Length: 264
Image (tube, rainbow, N blue to C red; front, side, top):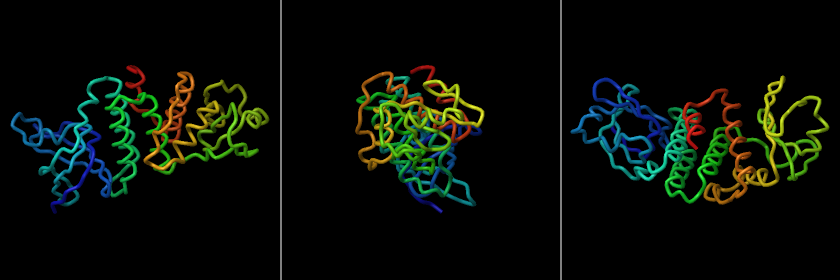
């Protein structure tokens, strides 16, 4: 069966000979693995359609659950990502995270749109890379069923305060007063994060970080990136919170995230 679908290439690996194997996230077929015959050959007609980050319309042949690329059209190659190593590292990590959160036959339209918007903003360079990355992490986790309840303190229902805490694994926020009252369960926690014996992970937030978290989780998709954090310390808090939320819930690290943190 031959079909066409839009999608983004989120992973490229070498196969036998001059072939490549692609992961493509599509809106309605989920993440599919596609073999590209002869793509590494200098004469290949599919070379431009088999590059990491490429957004295109792909003509794919399917037989017995296997997929082969027949042709297609590049919509956006995102070449401008290559102008800065930090952007490349962030985009690579976002693609790896998107691969982790998707599977074949999933409905991926929302996460695909988020990934495209994130790579577009990275390429333009008008927003800080750390903001784009944190928004992608938090929103992608929410889309995938890991959305925390950031509406108010889980105990006293205070919606926002100068200092609050996110219980990462519990998926709830606490104000500083309620956090202190329950300090017997979270003693020796640093002002940022620390694993504790009950496998708790606690992230400190300022009011600006709380507001950013609420906005990212609750805003309509077209407004998700429409906020600013100008203070570097608060941006670092948001960035580390997002990373911690991802790695704690998924129970794994990412080589691409380590690379990003090494070069940022």
